[in-house]
Length: 170
Image 1 (cartoon, helix red, strand yellow):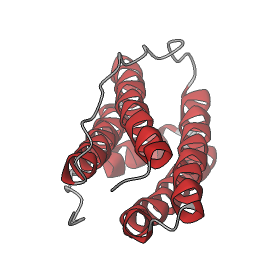
Image 2 (cartoon, helix red, strand yellow):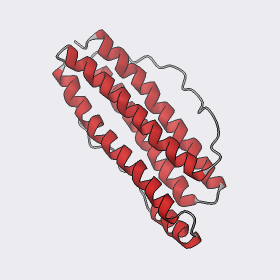
Image 3 (cartoon, rainbow, N blue to C red):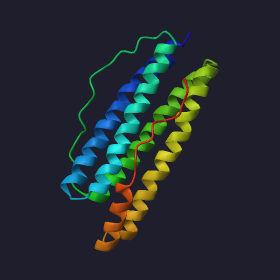
Image 4 (cartoon, one colour):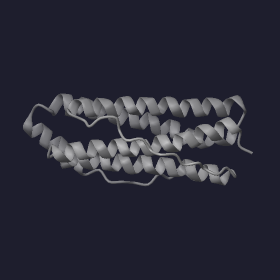
């Protein structure tokens, strides 16, 4: 049986993952308005990933006889106003989510819930990749963002990103 605190944290994380999807859709809309369809695509794919993270946790709770309790998803705090600030906000958000995943892992560890720890191993690895992707995007924007041709090429690169569903088995 799943520890009550671990189940509670996983349930809260479902909401946080859906919030992440909302946040990235907000970022996508900003870049679409800016005429940067590649950046918009990148964040749409990011939103799909976050939605799937929530669904993985939803299913994990159900697989452990815990009924997920869905709460309202908060609206992103404010509309983005600057390309660099959007990218930096994305990185900061990923770091925040990493901290949340680590807190759940720590709670599972404290009650020797090895099954949940194994489940969370994928998310720990995923968060490392998410932070690296966000950092790389900032670096590329810093290198090429002020140059129209460089920005065009970066936008084209981001337009090629496609969604791939996670391959985590529950």
